[in-house]
Length: 118
Image 1 (cartoon, rainbow, N blue to C red):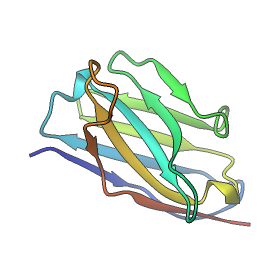
Image 2 (image 1 turned 90 degrees about the vertical axis):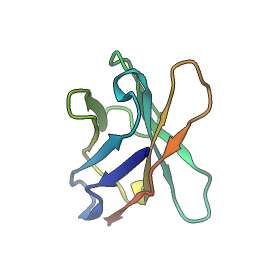
Image 3 (image 1 turned 180 degrees about the vertical axis):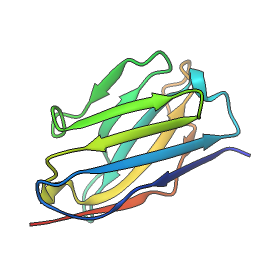
Image 4 (image 1 turned 60 degrees about the horizontal axis):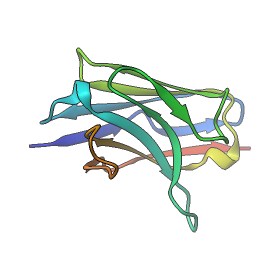
């Protein structure tokens, strides 16, 4: 059974940090591209960051220089270190994974809420 389970969300003051974790199971994690996406109320889902199986990363413009995505293939984990958080980072953050031969994401987690207070 495929699972992506996010954790680490919470309430933090502006300027603070959080680290999100995504635990994967049920598929060949090490070859999959994993992404973090977020969705704020009334807004479209937005790319935060992606990381390929080999470690190549990509970031959304709004988080470049503040967020860092990483993965531990031995543990089937992906992390999102979020620093210098802003109120506009408030959203539900989702972990997703797709096979490198696919353009669409195959699996999604349930999401974790991040709230940044001003």
